Image (cartoon, rainbow, N blue to C red; front, side):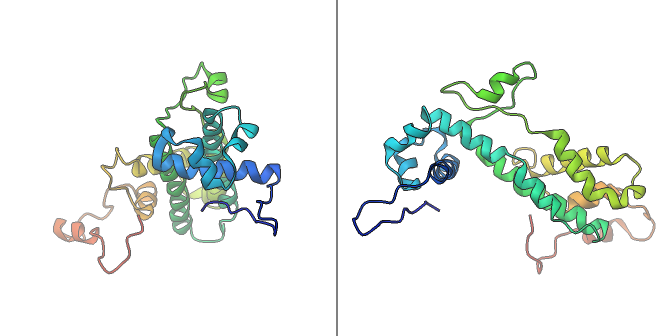
Length: 233
């Protein structure tokens, strides 16, 4: 939603404090590049942020610098860590896994959409400085702090670590891999896995551990989506 400046009785827009002005430009840029890609103009950004176009260049040296910072903001894992820290660790493991999958999928879907819009790719391992700074006129390229994310997921699973066959770090990695593959539009042919399926595959796999209890047709029917339930994908 565009930031609206408050207009005093004089009719002139109230100047935004520097931090608010910067945040307004970043938020407006994120919304617009998801829709228009890197072809978004500084005029569009300024109008969405509720500031004069010249204000952009007093905060950022060029449009590509603003896009770079906007993408960095979207990839910042701090909001993810906050969500994971708020999860109730007393809830059953199965419920926590579904919540974890939902949180990861929301973040991944937002990032996939953004990366598609700006044509961004992961950086090569030997080009960390260029990945951090970005090159003017080129899409920014960044690597998320995978180890920190794995640790945050592991803390959510820690109360049930005795129930896993693998170390918590490996379980966290497998969960992220499933969430990534199950959420990516190309990998899933635009039919993403539900959070419940991701949790179920992680915990139980796809094999029926009691194959003689039902015939194949009944087992297949058990896994069909219930039309009376909302689609949570």
